[in-house]
Length: 302
Image (tube, rainbow, N blue to C red; front, top):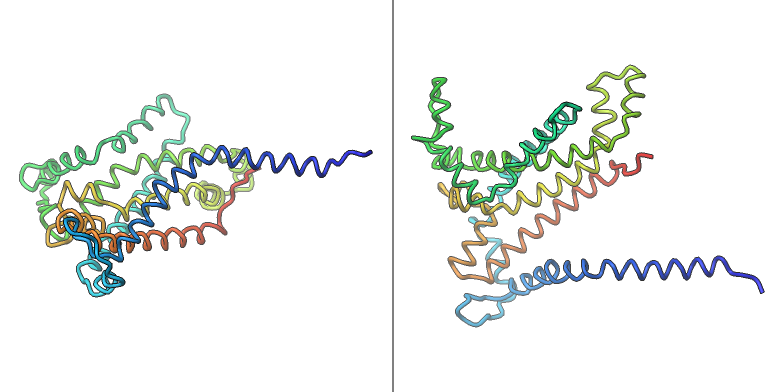
């Protein structure tokens, strides 16, 4: 009677797979309970007319027809897209530059790295109140600093032209250091032999960055841009503290409109419809990023 190595290997593989499923079950339960189930509930509510104090009434596609004709909602979408365009590219580029500067073997460098992460640790409420004072047009630190060089600063948070860039600047300040950590980890994961070989071949530092460093940072770039875009599309707390959606709706992002619709107008059915719109936008943007980076990303550096 001969042994059956192939059969034994197959049984071992199946047994290992079951162990794997067992270990990921708690995480899958969390995803189902706190991600998939809420999405399904919100999707269901979007087909109802529910004013919270009255019983839900099935409305079919009425909320979606209302959304198609709601200019204020689409204005909020446009404001959100502008905010994303102001915020995400700038904080990604700055995080990359910081990582390159801090990826040096210098005495005390870890303290400098920690210093840039401190803003990310601030709570949005405290951060918003602090920046409200900085942006104050009369006694604020920013306009005070500008006056020293003969520049009259604008009324940052009361001017529709400046309110959204000001809020975007605050979030860039808060999240750049956090994103820098990921780029720094990515840089330190690139084998130094690759840079040495490129330098031996005569590549300049700029050429080494664009031909060696940047392509190998694609996995990090993918993670950073996906998380940044998702977070930027869901911006709420900074807007709530600093501008309350004003002035003149210039910072009325879609998440803030969802909040007002649900908890001020008590129209939970239509708020759910707006939430589904935001969900679809984020899903489409994320899938586009997955497709873009999928063919440009290398994970194996061996």
